[in-house]
Length: 276
Length: 297
Image (cartoon, rainbow over all chains, first blue to last red; front, side, top):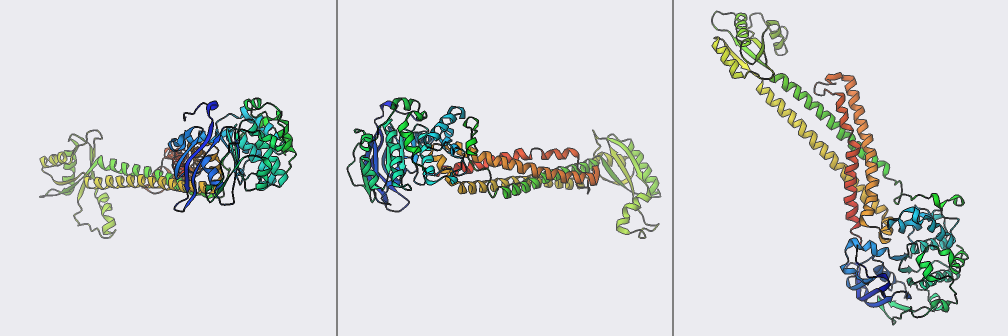
């Protein structure tokens, strides 16, 4: 197992230092990226299609290796990490993929259970929690449904439930509102904001500038593979205030019992009202 | 349906889709390979037994060809030879082959009417040797010389070499064929694993990015293909056993043809077929899957 810094002592979840990414022999998709994501921060990553937003996220969730530069995750230099250690790092990251990447042959319940199964946990320790989580995201009556029978909004919420179920320390969401209408987008954003309030670091890639503006969250822009706006740390402010949201429940309590989310009424309502 | 779902009773579903379109074809191909491998093994054992039997028969006997000299009649010379040989250490029994039997041996070459009465048909003495300490050709020759008999001893060593050689070739051919079948089965499984990983690349990628270890993913493919190959091994081995049983029933203990004397015990060779097929498939699938997964970052 990789040696990890004490969870409470990690201040920087992600650090890029002069990172570049090249696919094959093509010119660099990402160039000279240097930034940090502090623990508990919330950022948007904006930029036009093809600017490199997804590629940047892929570097963080270890779907790609950089062609140059240095990446640190949870205080660990990824370039020096052994292959056998990478799965354990990935389990600390929750990803909402742009295409959602649901397992179409598994039920909604099985899809959400995936991270727990991969982590080797016994069903008895999490099945009740998953049921609670699915109720919480408004899929309580569709636990046994196959993803293909779900609407776009339901699939989105299922993907989000899967991303958050294993208590990730950072959530990466690639265009999570891309297929949703504005109202649904706001509600999904509300979810991430609340999770961030509970201590989770959040990075959302989006080209929806209206959504970003309405959130009041710090954002950095990427164009032609380069960061073009100064990076701001979003941990200092309380983003929920900017959204006009009022969180309920104690964050510490929910983080200790991360799946007992029914305590958090503001989130529950936000998702259950959102509809498909 | 969804309303009746009870999370407390939930059991994890198989992470790989249960059935692929090509599963049936794969089971069929591997079953055919297992059938051929098992049939090869049974018939190799059978041919080996036949060769062994013939070798034992030849090894335990010798034939003496008597040539008359002087006024002594062939029958007299043969009787003396038999008598001399019977008292030789390492000989269990020595019998003169009657003229009629000797003529019968020549009949295939000369025909029924080809043997005229005056033809000097050589007289033969068949010698049965002691199984534990058989007399050598030289001992027999010395005994005949001592008795003043002009004769040639044929201890079948010329035939023995050919038969032993034929048995060895059959054995090597069977082992080679068996290895070839196993290799072919492994290749088919490896190919199917590649196809499976390719078709289910999305599933593998999601598991990989969600924190599955390489070994965990490889185990899924290993278990799937091992189970399929074990089924194929059962079907192929079963079919080979049925074929061998049919041959045994039709041909009895001596076999349908003399080179295939099948014993009921030979059918036991098909028993490990599912295990071996499953093992070969598991190794092939694991190696292939790990190779492909390691190509992922």
